[in-house]
Length: 156
Ligand code: FES
Ligand code: FES
Image (cartoon, rainbow, N blue to C red; front, side):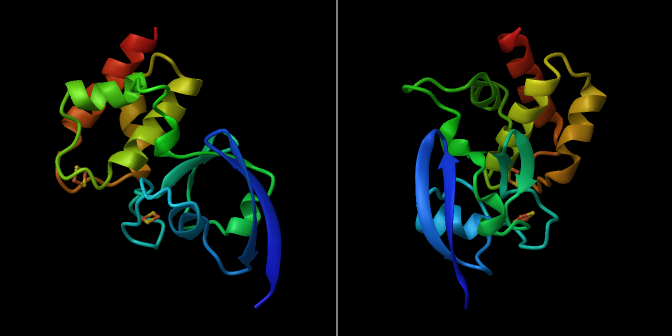
């Protein structure tokens, strides 16, 4: 198996690593960097539990090879909190009970964060469209939408 040297910045920290061609980004994040907040729910690009930001864009990290991330800036759920203070999107999920089992939550948080970065005042429909690639089997989505609306109001 061919090996490649990649350089990535994850949550503000630079990393250089040797990776196999076939290594998925989600496995690199979880198994090599021990950033296990990024979840694996399906491995088939359906659930969105593995969503991270790659150069500011939400990506399903089970669908991307680690070598494809070479040179990229990556944000995982662990990078949202700063100095012990939750990001407003995390605060929103806390305040509005936007989770039950929590399995989908890292992907929802990252997707919500990315939405608010490009659209600070989304409509409910825009929020629902943004999270349409993230599946939640518990909440019925109502409180997830409220959580992102809470974060939008806090960020304004
Ligand atoms: S684990 Fe990546 S989309 Fe489900
Ligand atoms: S809170 Fe359980 S899958 Fe969303």
